[in-house]
Length: 294
Image (cartoon, rainbow, N blue to C red; front, side, top):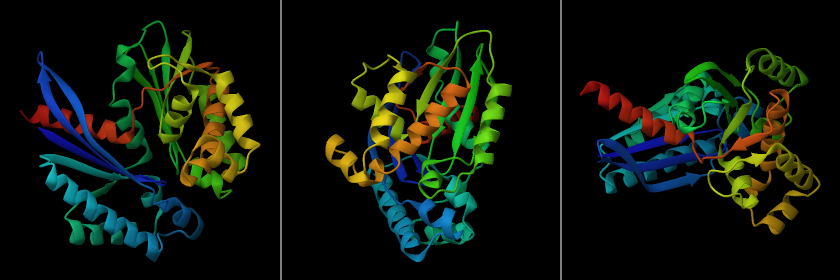
């Protein structure tokens, strides 16, 4: 069985295609293709309230490509979800209609809470030490999703309108930060030590740059050190020194700022980066729904 997930975020759109094979009665998810297109919808939406003509065309053209790829791979099931930017765009529903007509793809606009739940669908914490509590931190262009997990249960989930594209455009207020801090102080509490699980393209990049072994955590002190270094460099210097694309170099420092604040307020000093995403959660969600129908 082949399953595809389309995640249309505020910074980029991703198509993930997996093949699911049953191995010892357990599903094994094999990645066949991952395509990322930096649409940067948030650049329009968070400043003018809608998606402009140029980016609207990019969305439609990208979905045509995604549709063709799914046909080539003979995908059996897919789900396409749009998050923060499309939620806030005044013309979001019009664009969804255009995409449907041009590519046949049905896009759902999902809430911040459902976005947080999709990250949780990856079930990463289930394989980790039960002596700890875990805070999933998913940092996107338009929002940050927090999901707190303890004793095998989800204890808290919340989406905040604090994201890298919003920060890049100076659209996050002190009140936004205070709300996040207060929520964390009130809800992310445990008698067990709390460990973070990070997701999103930016933390994945920081993890690969750190040369930390897979399965090992990065320290909060390392994230603060990287943030300090990047904050002192221009976007061009970050691109040259660390071989980064411009659409990564300009937002990475803002992502680190979010991770550092969340971890500091939750008193967390370690973060695991298992390279999970909303798209991975969508794949898991589609498979789970199919199993329930059997």
